[in-house]
Image (cartoon, rainbow, N blue to C red; front, side, top):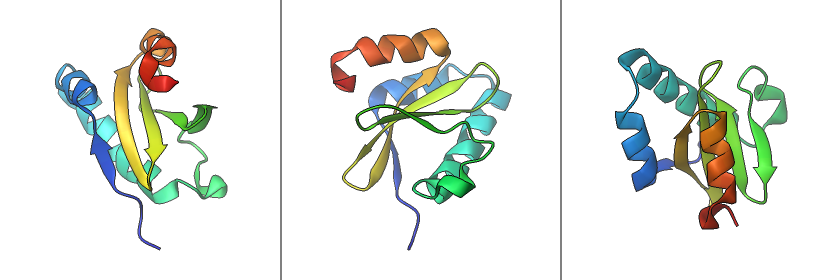
Length: 97
């Protein structure tokens, strides 16, 4: 089975643009790994991939950088990229309901 497609929502594109070159590269590398491992729990090791609520998930891009995504219609929709506070803010938003 091919890995699910990954799409970036407009807010995530803006978040990605604010990152340093190294952070940007790390997020992109992790996106590929998450896409290949999603749905295979034994392959999640080291990615810090976890379900937050409903169809909202997050994974670690670095020690302090998190990527929030929605699993919708067989696609990984990247919604937010930021720190723990950014994740908390996203979870309180209407989009995470």
